[in-house]
Length: 161
Image (cartoon, rainbow, N blue to C red; front, side, top):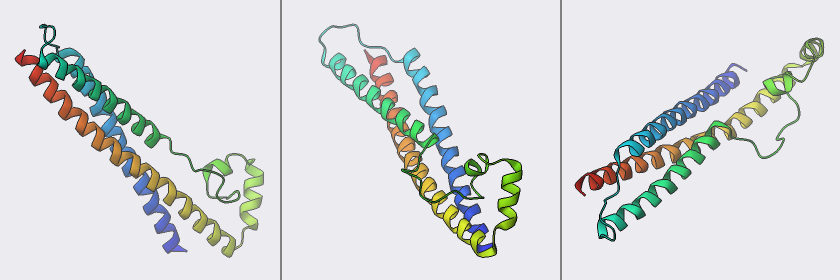
């Protein structure tokens, strides 16, 4: 039983790590956006190759921002596809739907084997959530890094015009 609890705690730790990465991406993405709006300027010469390149770069920057913001949003609120397991006495969402008395009664009736099965179910569910959150966090970090590089290039090119 102790091994199962450690496994569940480890999965919850992975979820927390993904949340930290997602929060970092969000902070950097929106701070860089403020910088870009303030610093990056388009050249004044109409029809120059540099101006056309910067317009295309701005379009790519906008697409990258949108993708990164979407990954951040999805990472903050991942959802499991459907009800994977029946109601458990471990998951806070299921517990919160019970009255205090009903929860207490149900918990007291739970046999050690039933508790073990519920822990196993919860480990499975948190594994799915952790995996999903980590995937979104990785994509958010990558796209935010790409966004920073493009902003930096646009700022340099904008200053040269």
